[in-house]
Length: 119
Image (tube, rainbow, N blue to C red; front, side):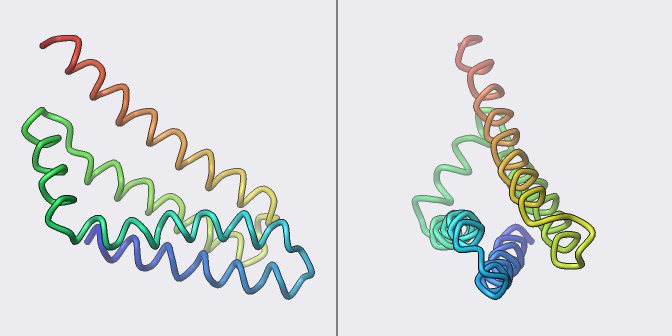
């Protein structure tokens, strides 16, 4: 399910890149392009042996990063769909997508930091 969420988020990011170029905004296209790059890089990392080992190590420490990654992807997917439907502007969609990504990274890092402090 996590892998599918990365694929779906990446495909919507690609659609937003194309739409950004169609409306003549290279800045939006590059911004969505960076999010697309993150999603694209995550797919081989998730499926590699090292990626699975890292996830298992985090899980053994008590941090289930997969649920946070899935929720981040799900919220970004919703944001992208609302942006593509025209209910959100491209700039607001970008800001929300980056905010979601940042917040979930902070959550994972803070959970890991709490565990490190205990041990």
